[in-house]
Length: 319
Ligand code: ADP
Ligand code: MG
Image 1: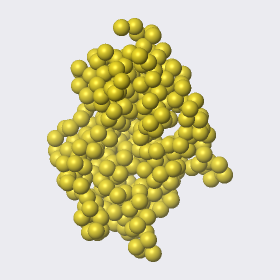
Image 2: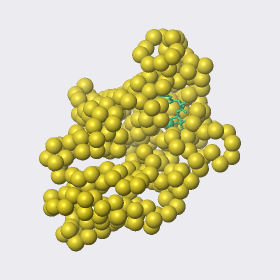
Image 3: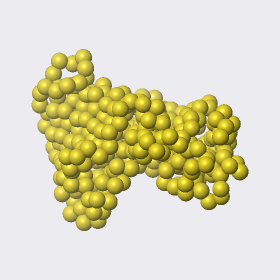
Image 4: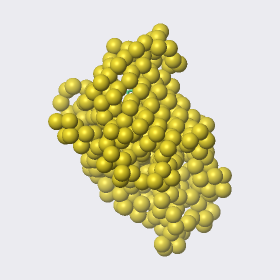
């Protein structure tokens, strides 16, 4: 059972990036307006995510690192189909505590004291402490108890590059928040509340930000780069579905490119950040533990909306 548990935890957390994603998802679910991420040693030494969100009430905090402990699913049947939060499985803190040393300090704004939780595997200690409102989760020594997993990790520089790109995607899709990513003590990415264009400036620089135009259609919001300045950078096409950054299905990338129609030379792709809203029952984030792949019930319909929205933005802002 011990081995089975570690294998299951490894499906949720197979690399430092997974921990960052799960902790940031929790901060977003908690309604934070400020999210700060620290990474040391490529995330294997330390990952810390600090938020000013709703916190965890003292009476339920000891349960948070327990497996399947989630406050986000109503018990009635069908709840998972209508979930609007990023998390819902109650496995992330549990997996982080299996895979590393988990430390959590949390305080809801209305609660007088804070609570501190230290979890090593299933060993959980809870103490009262004081802290600002919100939650700080720290994971140290990731995979130190799992030497086989540790051996297969990418070099720290590669992991940091991917974590930076991940945080960049969060900034692009949640531009209204304060963000900060610190790597080995140095600020890597900072962002103050702005619109999508401001987020493009924070992530790709002011030159890129000057080249985007706003897309504002029903259920499709964001920016695309002006067609005359597009480059073949498919890694700069970003989509979220109901607030979750997703790996875009090729159909959606194609929809953006087709939205440009003949304005786009063939073989190039624009930079885009598009936030899609679909009815909760029309999408299933439950396809993969990392939840980055979504199944859209009506992908052709969504693609058509995206294409029309991009074309509409080009028509509204003629060259
Ligand atoms: P899930 O997000 O699937 O519910 P997690 O293991 O990620 O499961 O978190 C377990 C529970 O701990 C959450 O349901 C939530 O109640 C609480 N929690 C975790 N992180 C935070 C946070 N940053 N702020 C507030 N509550 C949190
Ligand atoms: Mg979660």
